[in-house]
Figure 1 (cartoon, helix red, strand yellow):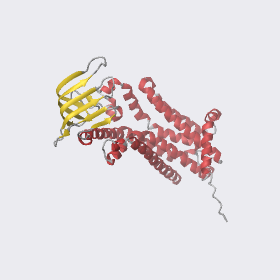
Figure 2 (cartoon, helix red, strand yellow):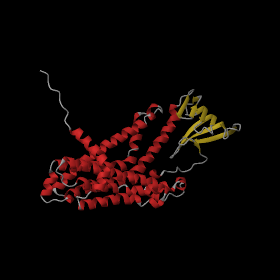
Figure 3 (cartoon, rainbow, N blue to C red):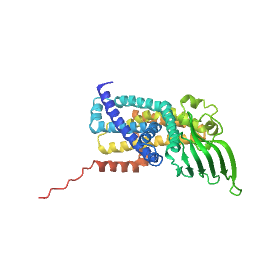
Figure 4 (cartoon, rainbow, N blue to C red):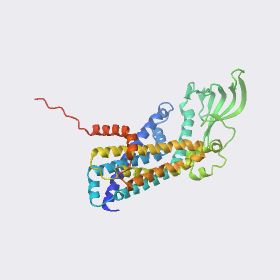
Length: 397
């Protein structure tokens, strides 16, 4: 790289890290607030909350990182224009490709990071998160539920125990499941014991009865049992030990390509197809966003108004491109024939941006300008208001 290329790369990379950390922090706080009941109502400590919310972040980084790169690229190019550096470089004979090279290198690094998150980090974090959820639900019965009290870990589900033995056995157990009002069930057992394996945890009840009423017009049914197992992860009856069926995002690439006898794949194969192609199409967006930013503000601009409008154009077009990709993902789940659109949107947008860079002046055209004018005008007014200095009150004599 030349000195100028290294300078542009440092500016864009620094802005990317700052924006990425800021967006990740905002998302982390939103997840933490949503999961705050883990600490307040389910008896877990703050470390568990921090761990669970952090493990949920990689699931969103594949979307956050390309947007952070788009904003960082627009900011860097606008700064080069504002400081007249692009004007000087253009006057010295440099082209838009001089600025494009370091930014494209940065986009390739981000694309590789997104691929790593999609194929390795996200499945690993979601699997570990499930282990924490299983542990939390086990702790809910072994630690949080107090003898002599009715406890409701979720709406429609109530537990009560008479006492807890020193070996952890629950005595005088009552569990009422009314989450499905049309099929309420009650479990009464003399003893209960929590048993865990690698994938889930179970409540083994002994010497008890099940009261259920599948039809409200019929009398209640009473079923006596010597031993009965309930899967605490789903609070459903589980007859035997079966391997847990992983969701599409919890699977590594080879598991997505060969789901085997997965119950989820048999029920909803479209979700597996969408997840597989999203993992390969998402890394295209960092490159596309950099090309869109270069097409919008990669040329030297002499007036602030033009720069502000082109910044708005670049951000709106990039956002619309990504939202279109997310909408197509839902369509691919329903129709396999829509799969090529996941690749056509980023590749097509990047190709149009490349053409615009080769022929810079008709970048957007009158039709697109009229279409996006209301949005860009409001954004320009907002930026102008933020730049306006605040008047200071004059000192009284």
